[in-house]
Amino acid sequence: MKNLSMGLLAGLTLLAASCEKKPGSSGGGGVGSTAPAAKSSSHILARKDELGAVGKARIANIEKVMSNAALKFEGGGQRMEGTFSRREFRTEITEVLDKTKARLTLARIESEGSMVLNGTSQPTPENPDPLREVPVILELKDGTWTATFETGAPTPAQQQALEKVAAEFGGEGYTLYGDTPRKPGDRWEVDASKLGEFGGLESLAGTFRVEFIEVKEFKGTPCAVLEMKIDISGLATRERSIKPMSMKLKGNAVVHRSLEDLVDLEQLLEGEATIEGEPAPGMSMWTKGPMKVTSQASVQPR
Image 1 (cartoon, rainbow, N blue to C red):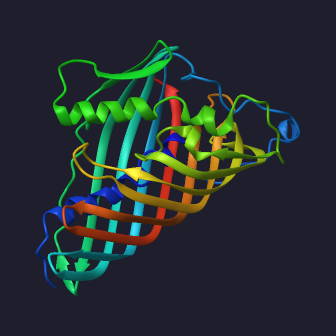
Image 2: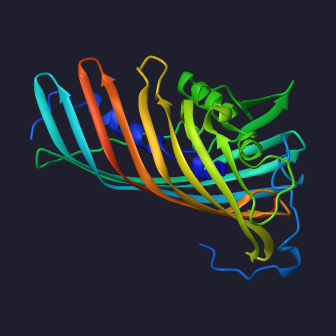
Image 3: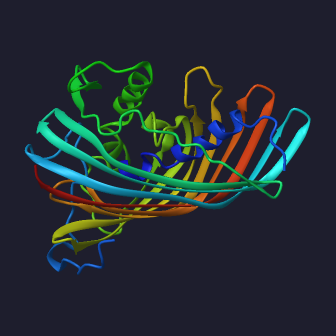
């Protein structure tokens, strides 16, 4: 569930960016049919470091929404309370160039938000993605994924973003699903700390509880339908110089995973996210509210 994770809580760090600038502020794809012949069979859901068929591309449209989250700031002798909402939509294209090489492009990103403090609307500054519309080459070298620009040299902000992309790429599906053959009715638990990084979070703790519900035809291909209960926490930071913020996510997800391409074609998550910490010296922040993440993907020749 790369795209479900990828960015699950990253949008919340925009709050930290807003806080730093206001220390003195006042005031889917449809339902498919069950595949009877495959219903009781065992299936491989992931393979280590496998990207999929060479020459194919996965196009994912991801929407993340946080609505009317409770928000509190304290700093400079002031206490402010209010609400925060944000919606982000992005399109990611992953092209498989070789068995251990892919091109990733953030082709589109849209965002909008609102924030009210002490009854007064506040601006919500944009946080442009440094990798937008810049093709990134991901390659497995000596057992580790690397991320570099296809052409040109990155800025310091882009280099940091590249390191995060490399750290989160490739292994997540394998860690969540494993290469053990599984069948409908199987249940298993994954220790979040084994993921390394997830959705921009580090120092992970908590669990993913996964259940294989059934096999269904979805978007014209047999898919494993998986349900997950997620209860995780971790640390996130926008820059190395900023003290990490603590984040928690608790919710439920449903995933349709292609048994042919071993990628998630649909991911739906609803839960509650909490973030707190010190976005700037002498300032504390806390926010908590509902989060919904939807990802629709397709696999096609590139």
